[in-house]
Image 1 (cartoon, chains in turn cyan, yellow):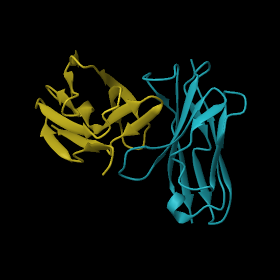
Image 2 (cartoon, chains in turn green, red; image 1 turned 90 degrees about the vertical axis):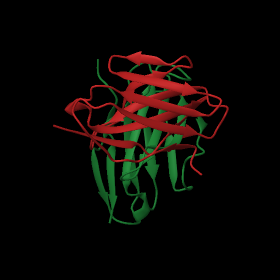
Image 3 (cartoon, helix red, strand yellow; image 1 turned 180 degrees about the horizontal axis):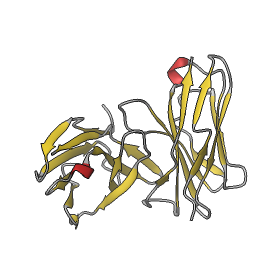
Length: 114
Length: 108
């Protein structure tokens, strides 16, 4: 079956623009995670959804970052007034259960803020 | 101090060598442990889970020491295709914390 998909794969934004990154998890997966990965670093946790409920958003770096998953499937990560330090790969992952399950990652969206 | 720490490497080893990676974690409430593999410009993929009793999957052996809060990965008879970054992952409830990764290059 289809894996996790993300769009766009690449995004170039001018500083100050708003961007929206989309994640389509594997069908039936309860959990959905967003991560930010800077060059040479491991993925840094941003936020977690269990179905449509956002249970943890402790990793969101500022109030410019907002995520939603209104129907418990597709999720959108929105970044308002982008800054250069937001440049990174944004990874989405989904898993079947709620704890300790393998996470399946999408290919990521590479965001470059100029 | 980061919650999950790994030696970044790089580890450059010849084919057939045995190589070991270590990882320490700071949160004693951590419940599940994993090794993920990430190839250059690709997404991470699960290599193996790590169980308290230690576990093996072919050429790969993972160990967990809860008392020392330490995880290891041993790769025997390394292949060129093992070249990648290996990420140590620690899970506490719904919170997955990744190490920065250890880069491995296997050379002919």
